[in-house]
Image 1 (cartoon, rainbow, N blue to C red):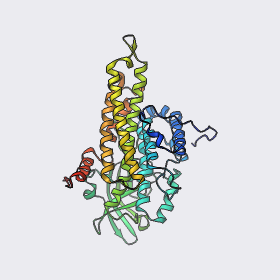
Image 2: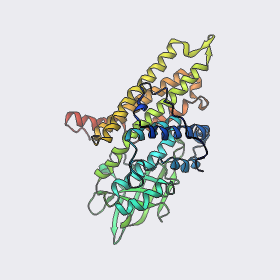
Image 3: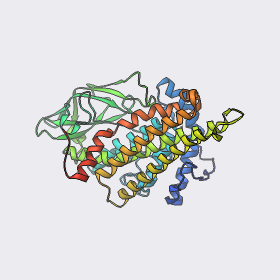
Image 4: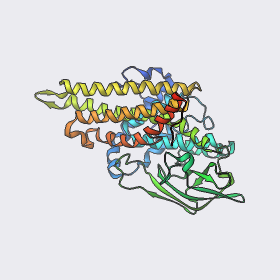
Length: 401
């Protein structure tokens, strides 16, 4: 499926939930891309996500249209001119999550984690080979870091081992919670070298013998995302598939830092999705002879929700501005992620409360955002780990175990 190019460019209209008008910071060109994305999501994606969420399946028909909108590889100059600000990329994550957090996660894995790993950790040959194909969605990627027994302690606790054997590497181990992995063409596998004990990255085609991805069933959050358990049983990859510039966990952490702020943006978008549904519902639902939006207690829930959204948006805009100017540090992204996800979690609860019993039904637009908030709250760094990153920065003392 490709975009219908006969359609006129969409008209940009600022979101009413952008109460302080942060979208006005975007260039006209960026506003147009955002308007086209918003139009596509409302026309083609919003009508189908509840059904796919219920079935826990991924709508693969959205991949090519998202590539046509040039959402993949926006940060990576190797595939196209570096022309989009980090603030704009944040608004893209927000817009995606406003409609569906799972689609935002898919884009984040493809564009941020998988392509980011190749851009940051790969050499010129690897970037030229893989990034254009991924930008066109001809190759779908996944990012294999988390393991069954290693999550927050990945820097020291990886159990997947890479052993050098002549011109090849042999990978053994397992990964868990790997998004896109049931249908990815390649997965970036992070493994500890048996030679020097350092974490290294490998581009692993998923057709490689010994590589097995099994879908994780019974999720109650981000159900559209296809998370998998990966088993690596003597998976042999050539030295040419080792990320040549990824030689320690510091390089892995660089990729995570560059994507963490966009997870914070997605948290704001998920909160906005619930908030907009609550505003719509309360304006239509009549009790005691008038819409419930005219009741003080309901307005209190909506105003508190908007306050959380607006405060979080101010933070994520600033952290992206710091990235644009080369001043963003790990603690900046960590604070944005932990704060925005906390406020998101609070906000979706208030929005559900505003809908009463109907708040738990998919039909009214809040329940999916409420469930998906739980995954966003935890992935790409838990609140606790991000707190320790910020705490170290402000005290000068590491409190990690």
